[in-house]
Structure formats: C-alpha cells, structure tokens
Image (spheres, rainbow, N blue to C red):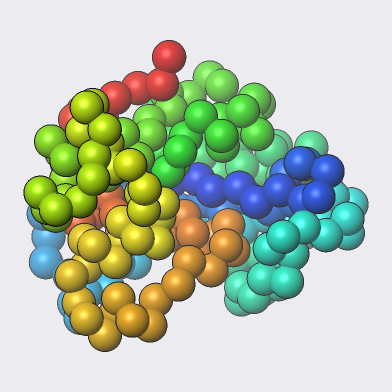
Length: 197
C-alpha cells in the first residue's frame, strides 16, 4: 500500500489543538501529470475541535473558511476516534507533516503511526534543488531562514504570479494540502523521507 496522510494542526491561545486538517494521497500518483497544476488529494477531512475552538487563537479567524462538506465539528475525543477509523479504512501507516515533531506532539493519540517530516527534505540544499547558492544555509545544508511552508512552496512553484499572490492560510486543512503540494514538487517517494525518532 502506498497511501499516506498529511496532517496539520492549529492551536488556540492555550496551546490546545483547535483544528486538524488531513489529506490522503497515494505515492504512485506523484509521477502522474497534473491538470493546470492542480494538486487534489484522494480524500480530506477537517476537524474543528470544541470547546477548544471557542478560546480563539492567532489563526482562529480562518477556522470556518472550509466547505461544510469536509468539516466535522466535535470534541477532541470524537475527532480522534473518527480520524483513526478513517485512516484505518485507507490502511494508512505513514503520516507526514511540515515540522512533524510539532504535530506529533499535538496528537499523541496517533503515535502508533510512522511520522515523517516534510521539512527535513524541503529546507535542505542537498535535497531541494530550488535552493540556490546565494541563499544562506547552515553547515548541515538547512536554510538559515525562510524555510516555512509559504516561502518553500513559493520557491518550488517558481511561478511569478503565484509567488506574488500566495500566502499561507493557516487553516489546518488548506495547510495540509499545501504541504502535500510541497511533497509533489520535491518528487521524493515515501521511502526517501526520514522517520521521526
């Protein structure tokens, strides 16, 4: 099975998870051509966690910016139960996230899965061919700055219009889709990513 999940979380002012965005895709689709540069996952889910969402947070204003078709508003316990059932339906074993250690810490209920960090390839010169010599890097090859989702996606897209108009939404589902785009643009297979310890 080559299906995998990409997860993003957003937290409230109390550092509690207030939303979870998840997309599922298939490693074998990476090499297939995209229509109009569209990156559409096989499936997606978006959880708004109550009552944590009521506390508010830095990105609380985008919580309800997703179609109700993909949104489930419920308690954390209900969200995790539904998410586990859904991931198991797809036989998911691998979960990816940008800065995966953060999302993994936020969702300890998912520690039975193998977690992989997209940033470990995207932000390093030896893995990301779009990182040019003029950009400052650490001795490890990681960019010194500008290695968040937004600048990396702009770098990989290389499209001037996209670079001027795109900004990270900080909605968990839309951000998970953006992180999946980074994986497509890097063109590495699941086996090329490094598992979190």
